[in-house]
Image (cartoon, rainbow over all chains, first blue to last red; front, side, top):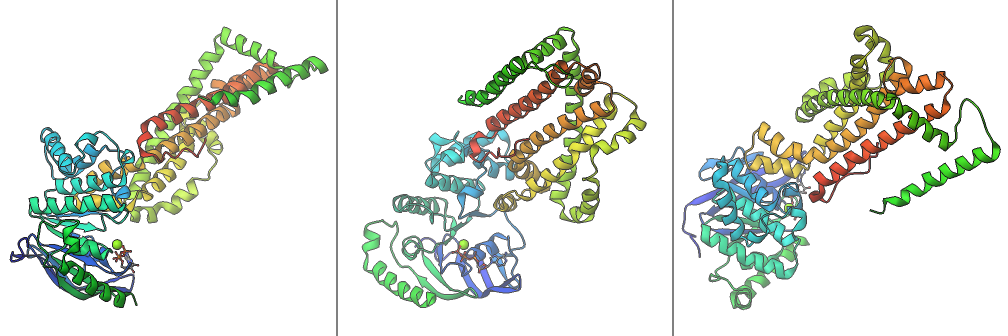
Amino acid sequence: MSGKSGSVVIEFRDVGLYLGGKEITQNVEFNVRKGEFVCVIGASGCGKTTLLRLVSGLYQPTTGSVHVDGKKVDGPSRDVAIVFQDYSRALLPWRTAAGNVSLALEAIGMPRAERADRIHALLGKVGLAQHAAKYPSQLSGGMQQRLQIARSLAQGASILLMDEPFGALDAMTRQSLQDEVLELAADTGATVLFVTHDLEEALYLGDRVVALYSNPGRIARIVDIPLTRPRNQLSTREEPDFLHLRRELFGLMEEIHA
Amino acid sequence: MSGWRGLIVPVVLLLLGEAAFRVFGYVGDTLAPPSAIFRGFAEAIGDGTMVTTTLQTFATVLGGTVIGAAFGLVVGCALGFWNLLYRFTYITIECLRPIPSVALLPLSLMIFGFGYKMEIAIVGFATAWPFLILTYSAISQVEPRLLEVAKVFGFGPVGTAWKLVLPAAAPRLMTALRLCIGIALVVAVTSEIVSNPQGLGHELMIAQETLRPHRMLAYLVLVGLIGWGLNNLLLWLQTRMFRHRGEVDTEVAA
Ligand SMILES: Nc1ncnc2c1ncn2[C@@H]1O[C@H](COP(=O)(O)OP(=O)(O)OP(=O)(O)O)[C@@H](O)[C@H]1O
Ligand SMILES: [Mg+2]
């Protein structure tokens, strides 16, 4: 239970959002504490990505407000990093893996001389040290997503937003990346807001799961996940609590989709 | 390289042409057999005119394209970055753009007189608009996700343009350059045929006026070869430069 008693770092205060005259998000109110791993689940188009965009400052709420570290969000901030769902579009195809990580270091104004070591360390962290000179088009999907994660870590943010980062990957790759992300989060003490449409993934990763209703996006339920850490792909998924929560959330999702 | 297959048709056509001349024994002022065209090449290279005039045309093609592309790039970027500017200027641009560059020859001649300047001005005008429009569209087509990446990393307008937008647009800008070089060659040779007394177009006219079809056709073939060569050179460069992207857009052949 990493730091569930920590201070509040992300706050949704009665957030409503209209885009193009349509109500996308309604009355969203919840907090994320320092070091917490919170998963957001819901049907396609229910506004999961929208919540991340509100935290990252890419969208401004129509009503209410979003606060990060006690400050109202009014634009992108260095302390909030985001891993996009579509890694193939979010990476720079003309830069190598090292070059893509470098982009984040250039953004924070790190002198060129210091970058090489940092890039090497970051690529090592996600297991891409051997692939530093490869271009995204030469990397597999899982490797590209690892690269995007390394790039977002480079920013040195304490808040990590992840938008269905493993949605397009096969089951095996997905499981190993899940464990890597848990490890990274534990190592860095980062606060993670993780969007997925995969209920089991949410249970496996999260300290809490926020389930959303669609049209407009509202909070349906917030569920605590009292599973012990570190989690294990085999034993955690067999724990009675896991199975019980899975059944409960499954029922809720059926209700949401109906 | 399996490009040799492309040579089959021209070689067969040349042989057929030669055979036709031998069989029907045509003699006249408009056509010449391939063997005579080869002779025309040899003559024109031998007396030095082919090299001089090729260099003259090359100079105007390059000078004009550099000026036109630079203008198109700067204005196209400005329009791409500031949509307001685009809304203010697009009618003006759409009115200037369709003016046939050759129609400006008299004006250019009055301003600059005969020589390089007037021709470069015409070529510059002809290439500026397509380059501008293609730059604008290349910038508008930059993956929106990359602009968001720039935003979340906190890049300002200059950093965003330099590190994300321009590199992302580069393959399309290269295609624009290829297209413009093709246009430049056409316009340069045309202005030399119509008025400017220099370059390949003028030489072509002289050969025609002095009733030497074999030499005229040699120049005609040369213009074709130059256009083909320039396009291939740029295409090769483009493929090399952007080979890692797996999306080199090579469909627009000038
Ligand atoms: N810029 C926009 N203008 C108008 N509507 C938008 C805009 N962006 C998103 N929407 C709408 O907001 C709703 C929520 O979108 P969002 O991308 O947050 O969904 P999501 O839960 O992430 O879906 P998915 O699981 O498919 O990624 C959708 O109905 C979408 O059509
Ligand atoms: Mg989404």
